Image (cartoon, rainbow, N blue to C red; front, side, top):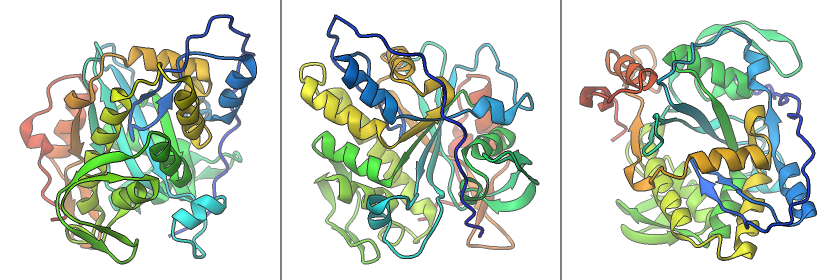
Length: 359
């Protein structure tokens, strides 16, 4: 696997923010990983500027050009949410297990579809070990990387960068990606700690010597470090593959969203700021969301989505016949799944079943 590092695209330009006389507080909404806290308000100008300046932007539209799926009028909104295993910075390196690993990969990937009306959502997890065809892409430095077949999905980020991950997802699904959100190890840990931990119902005893995670089955309140180990454990559950932990990741996402929604963030500006700071300092988005104002507008449009109604699905995959340690998208299930998302229609039950389960 190549570990060529990719330099993100230029930071998105932002309009200068103006001081607001009216305190509206900070309203945080986490959408995938969805993840991420979106501030809907301002306080003092310097506070707004600090949070706004934390957000890193990637100009996805410029990098991808016109060779993209058509944006259909009934296709709702589609977000690609990545949790990256970047070792950049001392905290990320320590959380990632230290060692000499360089670069970054997409440790967690979800396509979050919000249908028209935005009252529900579906999150499709793409296993990191899925073999895909990487299309020809342009790196952040302007150089072109030729397309290649049978590459691991999580290697695309390391080899070419986030814009190419978006292009790969669009090519394999035919789904137009409207927005991109990425958070790294440290940001995920700090986010969970900032909200005071997340309670999950651990499905079975976990004894993962590789990560040091030891949990007994049943409800457990996890801090940031424990939560990161929980969503990344491979050896503590199932067959030790990436497929086994996807269920944990989806379960944790629902618990995290519910925790955020249940907290009175507007009633506590101090907590709101702490959470927003934790989220934004490790957040990378497409240029369309790379400002506090844009995130706030998107957050307001997501108000009607209830975490309890969000459906989580793993992309149907089958074990690869050449390399049983890898998986490939299973047909016709995966085709049916992506078609339903493209058309904003009901996902057939058979499209939710994966031949390979990691159990």
